[in-house]
Length: 257
Image (cartoon, rainbow, N blue to C red):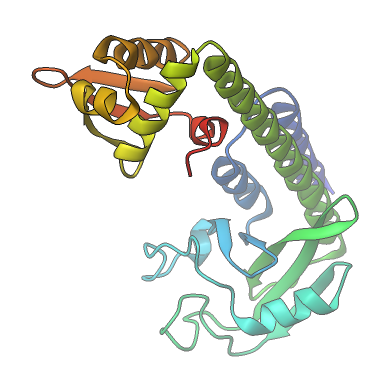
């Protein structure tokens, strides 16, 4: 009983941190992995692993290979797709390795559990827990449920923060473009059409000639966009400018794709 109470207390500490501080999912997985003493894999509905952590006692020669953006073995995904509730303590005597092209796992007697993550009643991700030799006890299942809740809350919070940041970036782009004159907008469009991969070098005289404006108009447009933190510029030679786009929403606001 003392062991589970200690683990719940540690999970409560993690939950308290996640309630007040943004915790990268990688760090969150590492902490939860240490508490539960099992491997943890976070994956999307396509089976792509985006975060994971391997328990110290299950480290193998292949652990140094990154599993990020790789896919879970198909049998995990078939089980995940067929169930909208957690599936626990599935046993494999001689399991396949999670790393591609390895074959049989170096460990035997694998027990695994899969927990779905929902957002707005839609299954958006899942958590795979893996342990060897020792099955998940009823106490472990409670801890896994609690862990799943912590991860779900953190993922949803980070998604909300991402949406909020994107909204702020869009608003900043709209505001920056609003302060451009008609001629400056033409110049800004021509600049964005000239640079590739959101960075490149342009010449003010060339842009002015294309847009039937003046080099000073082009320069003014660039200054306004830089003051709005939409681009950064660097002088390159006579009338040359290196431009780097730091807010991609600017292209949409200027109608440049």
